[in-house]
Image (cartoon, rainbow, N blue to C red; front, side, top):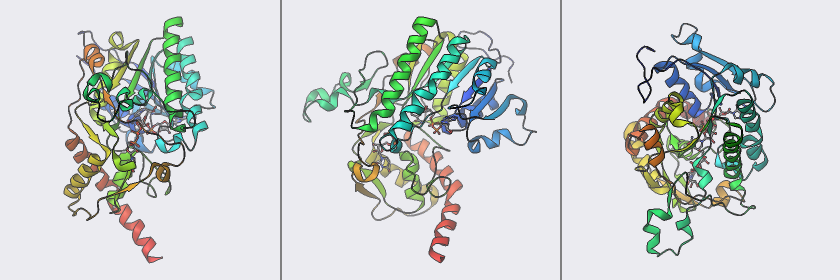
Length: 387
Ligand SMILES: NC(=O)c1ccc[n+]([C@@H]2O[C@H](COP(=O)([O-])OP(=O)(O)OC[C@H]3O[C@@H](n4cnc5c(N)ncnc54)[C@H](O)[C@@H]3O)[C@@H](O)[C@H]2O)c1
Ligand SMILES: O=c1ccn([C@@H]2O[C@H](COP(=O)(O)OP(=O)(O)O[C@H]3OC[C@](O)(CO)[C@H]3O)[C@@H](O)[C@H]2O)c(=O)[nH]1
């Protein structure tokens, strides 16, 4: 498997050891899967949970069993972290609180998780001369310049006012009492710290700004594999509504726009970063799919249609309902209006392009959601009715 693998410049790829922090999450689980099935690299998988990577850890007869180790570590307070970073050639930090429902309701935890807890990781990498791939977010861009123009301004149609470029776009957040921006602001500061470590101390780093990566294993279904009152990201919220045959809730009318990229396409980009350090070091990369733009309302409509097809059920008569952001997320919520990634840098450095259409990625993801959760939801709801 390892034989004959070459990087983008034709050089043989040597097997490396990767310390992956947050390996048990959505992105981490897909990255571990890719690394185990298609590369010779070793992974020291760090997380507080392992449910999403259990299938890669057991049984011990799996062909990659000697290439993946799970370390149940909370990076807030565990002295084993530095040792693991030292043992590895590369550290990938995915650990974070990254669900918008938390940003305005648990702003302190959000800031600690996204800034303070990431500090030792950066420090250990810098002090030990280790390469770091750090996961930031498209949210560092905040709002577009265009959203401040009058509604009927023709400039709103000009990409210069809304396409988000790593090396040119400003970061535009709401006021401090709009605590939604606690996450974006913490991510921006850790990006600046990493960048400064690179400039002043020679840290070899890559910063990734994911633009709404979605697919199987994202977040949780409330009351099934997560808290009943929990609010996950939109894919899981809408999946939950579809599985329970409830109307999908459109926050403030579902007018915000997003571009969604299939997790499997995005993971290809991360693998290119891992295996092409000369092209990825010192770079900040947008990773998204500019062709998959929809309003949240259109996303809800498409998910309703796709789910009816994969589940063989008719759609509801009233498939959506409007809710205010205050009712849904509480005080201090605010939103990014539109997020289209500029792809120039990732294209130039790594030749990467996303492939999967929104319809196709929803079809495979909702097939997974239906297969994984439909029975469990039926059981849970029949228990409630019986009691
Ligand atoms: N999924 C996306 O579209 C997206 C978009 C923008 C940014 N990101 C960033 O990518 C990263 C991964 O996102 P994800 O979608 O996989 O989220 P996720 O919540 O599924 O994964 C994060 C993982 O980090 C772990 N973690 C958190 N704090 C920890 C700690 N103190 N110690 C050990 N483990 C800890 C969690 O248990 C979880 O498994 C995050 O940094 C997030 O901000 C993701
Ligand atoms: O039931 C729902 C849930 C959400 N919405 C609206 O959908 C939009 C997208 O929401 P979501 O996927 O939860 O999150 P964001 O895109 O706003 O933010 C994420 O982007 C990247 C990341 O950094 C990590 O994933 C995170 O911050 C939004 O407009 C919600 O209001 C809805 O209408 N109904």
